[in-house]
Length: 165
Image 1: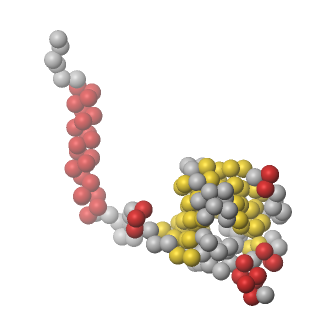
Image 2: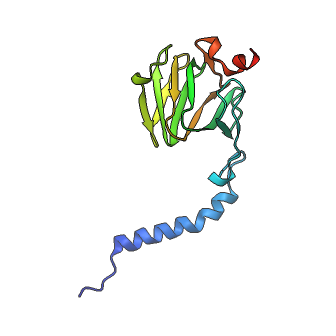
Image 3: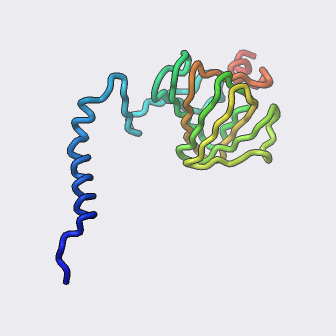
């Protein structure tokens, strides 16, 4: 039986140990403004009044209401629907859990949607009308350049406006 040390494995193991031993140094030398958020530390808030009730929103980075980069998460219950709308800036969306059904256009046509499942990514240029709904509880992450806005194709679909009636 050959008992020689396998150099590639030894080198790989040494590299992993070296990287792990440096982790505390990386944290100590982290650039100003860097942030890490574990899932249990995410603070969820009710969505703003211009979105359908029942959703929760978390701001992970930046301020979506101001110019500059931002990252937010939207947690929705099953059956959540967002009527046709558009955003001034481009939208980058990643499904974290569940499935988001996305459709393009100024009219909701549920049979013409695409189910974007956990891990799926969606990019949409600014001012492109689209709509979304969920069948199960779903979490999506949106990032882009602020300010982030939401303009309904039909202003009467805005939940904030409906609440004032």
